[in-house]
Length: 125
Image (cartoon, rainbow, N blue to C red; front, side, top):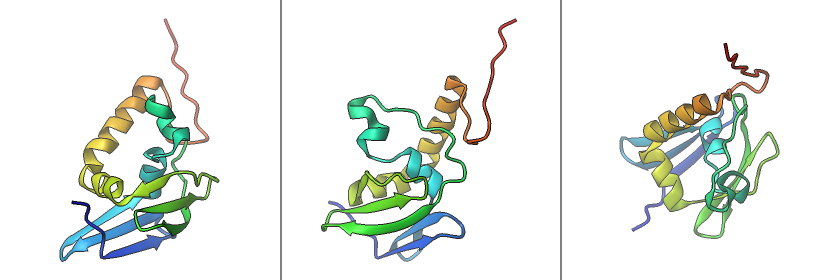
């Protein structure tokens, strides 16, 4: 059964989305985390995910309900095509630590950086 958060707060200064599900059950999802895990086709690649990088400073500029089943998040880099269903948001909350660790591993393997102003060069000696 899909759980709905009892409260949703967008914190533009800290660039986080807070979701409360019950007493003592509050999750803080950074905008960068949400951006790189967007359920959009641009990110998910129709079953072949496209690694997002250089999103370190991205923020959330807005959110709005998408019917009764999802939130549409708008990021300050212009991305706004992903609909975050309640079920998907809950999974991001519950699996945040593991998903973030996997993302950082993928970045390292691809030789990419979270910093949009940084380019990683590997020298083959």
